[in-house]
Length: 152
Image (cartoon, rainbow, N blue to C red; front, top):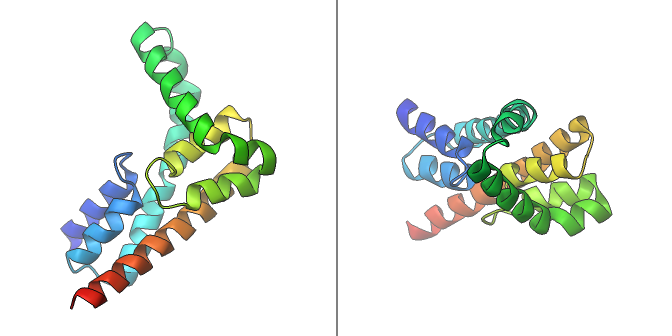
């Protein structure tokens, strides 16, 4: 059980699925349902400070390299296009709703980048991401539990 929870938390930190993959993985492997929600939520929240450190320190160093810069601009544009209208118009609430949607490309990675690019206050951006992550986790958690119950 511990190993499955750890794998789920690693999925929740991963940009390949975040908690949208971690929660179903843990639930389908028999991890205690409330532990799944809390563990994957906390792991997904860790992305925000990691990404901010990356953008503040590491990103500035790597932007000197052409291929990295090209990839960074591509990722920045995607985050700006996805969240742009909502964050520009509604600020905190727009970012929160964007992160809360449990669909590919709308997680904390894109939310952190969008908040950074639009110059939102770090504290506000963190809370918008945290509330959005919580809503997204609850949607995925509830949907997965309901689907598991329906299949039995």
